[in-house]
Length: 319
Image (cartoon, rainbow, N blue to C red; front, side, top):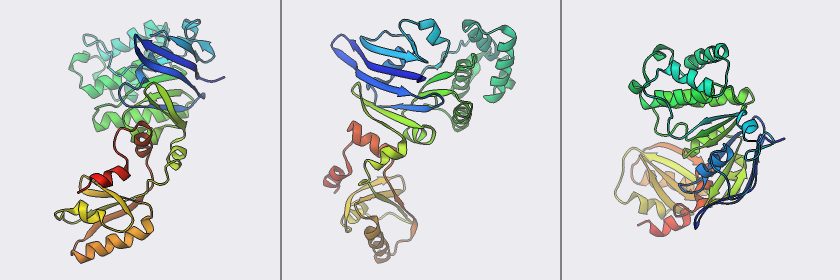
């Protein structure tokens, strides 16, 4: 039995087709990433899977329970962390957790034990009796995640859990996700942070215009575009028309400036590397760093969603 399964899931809002025959399954204990640009259908999918929205067509199952026909049985398996923190500002962190436990019918003694554990995990124990309106965004986000775990769910839905957060909150939340995975909890994660999905997820689905464009493990998805080889180089100083000069090197398809570095796309890094070294010597430049890069999950995402020009087109647009 799958933890999560959809079969030809569709959803229309008038003339707008938000989801179009979406089918996938998530194994028990898996961290499953659900990636896509804004408007791709990510939030609509979560709303259907958690019983908030009814689909126009198709079916969704949570631990074998049809979310429309066995809503209560399905929801007992779930923890939900929405994109917007849903804490009550006029309550303390402690009272927010106890109130959420009451909504899930968690016995009071068990709820209090779990609340203490979660406050410690999310580094909120010292502020447990403070009203939440004085909390930072990161603290509220951590509390929201704690509230989603108060019923010890078997399946956790995380909608953009680390969006716009400080480094400390990011690290805590990622560690919690890793620990949940080790404990066998199924995690359904939507995120705009592609590197986060690459690090955390066993598999990812890329959704675009309401349809699944690809589903696989991050490394296997990367292998589908092995042609996107690149070299990242940083020099001790920047010269005028760097992009144009580097674009003229042998076998270079395109050049993209990324901060203080240049990413050079090439079909043959082994033959382009000596040309970069010669380029630096001829201009009395010191190479501070030089690494070859295979295709990234971001490259796969861009290729499948068409959000930006491909490296080949970038070459045409480079001066």
